[in-house]
Amino acid sequence: MRLPWKKTAREVGPQTSAFERQALPLLPSLYNVAFWLSRNESDAEDLVQETFLKALRGFVSFEPGSNFKAWIFRILRNTYLTSRSGLAMRRTVALEDELKGSEEAGPARIPEAAIDRQTPETNLLRMANRDALQAAMETLAPPLLEVILLCDVEEMKYREIAAILEIPIGTVMSRIARARSALRAAIEGEIGSSREFRT
Amino acid sequence: MTDHFSQVTLNALADGELTGDQLALASEHLAECPSCTSKALYQSLLKSATAKAGQRYNPPSQLQERVASLASQANSERLAHGSRSFWKFQSLGWATAALLLLFSIGMMIEQRAADKARIVAAEDAALVTEVFDQHVATLAGNMPLQVVSTDRHTVKPWFQGKIPFSFNLPEGLPRDTTLDGANLTYLGNQPVAQLLYSIGKHRVSVFLRQRSGEAKVNPSLTERSGFHVIESSTRDLDATFVSDVDPARLYDLANTIKHAQAGEKQ
Image (tube, rainbow over all chains, first blue to last red; front, side):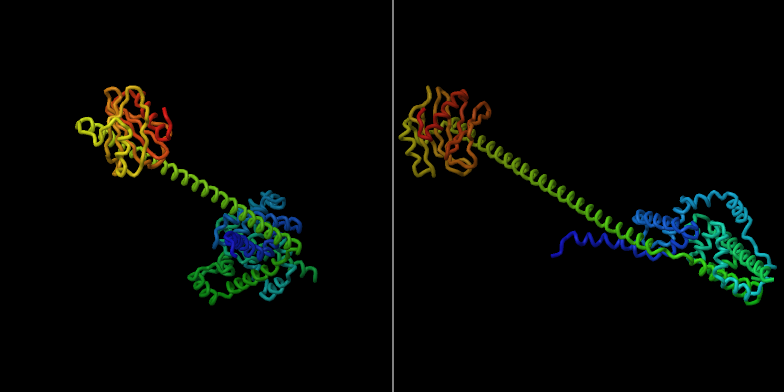
């Protein structure tokens, strides 16, 4: 015998399972970005857990069909900004000023000489060195690191990144340019030091 | 596009952010410019290498379990809440429906009672009008009574076979009251015994008919153009008394006739 409230109970289920279906596969990505930003395992765990809690609470207001990944990453980012490591990052006023100045002045241009000095093969070899690149990424300031993580690792569009970081697309583009220049400089620095070490 | 690519353009190219037109122009330029081609290649390689290097940290299994359990727990709570809300809502709904039903039934009963009261009142008013008209017609036309007798043993038998009921006439009447005779008449298409009495010089019509509807336990008095109309009931009969005599004396006669129906003597 079918009971009348069974239907209602089943109808409630899919709404929540929709959250699980969309959010749980993003756990590795969220944790990865959280770890990169917080640079700490336990902070990253707390950050992700809090993000999930907030997302669960706010899922009723999430508009179905819109970008869930961008939505939950925005929650993660806002949670990070209010976390201990996020607050520490925000206190880096000098860096922000430097970024602002460089963003206003346009993206930094890579010196032509830097490119000409290296052959693509050399660069490829360096970039293939995962540890070297990770070390270079660790040197990035958080505002640059987060755009590079969202753009390259999470393969998000500039529009999505702008929405998550709550900045104009132009700022996203200039930060990406700045971040890649910094990575390139870091990699070249590694090459230089390796050469010096070898000689 | 003849100028070399800016860093932003190189990034947009690597990130797939160029529009169709921009991409066509960029491809045209790349075909002719080895320097920009080298930079674009580098940018693409850097992007893919960063993507690989960036995939560095994997969530510990306990975090995965915790988050999954969190989502599942929230699911259960939401289900329970949903169910509670549903039951709460359903209970509220049923209670509201029951209240509405009770209210509707109450309204319906009240409406029916009011309708019934209105019908009874209208019937009573029509009856009063009819008996009043009959009484006035009897007096005004100075028409002879169908049976003229002061003897109750003459009057009562005269109705045999004429009406579908029987009645008693009191042996003793109130002071200064006499039986004058009777008529067979009709009220509401029903045969009725109209008894004529005199109280002093006042004429009194007493209409006896088979009872229909509820008995009037307490006699009621209404006024009509200076005439008094008393309605009363016995076990089987309805009686209506019309006269311009003092109501107290009319009541006396009404009580006497009422008691006579029960076989009592006043």
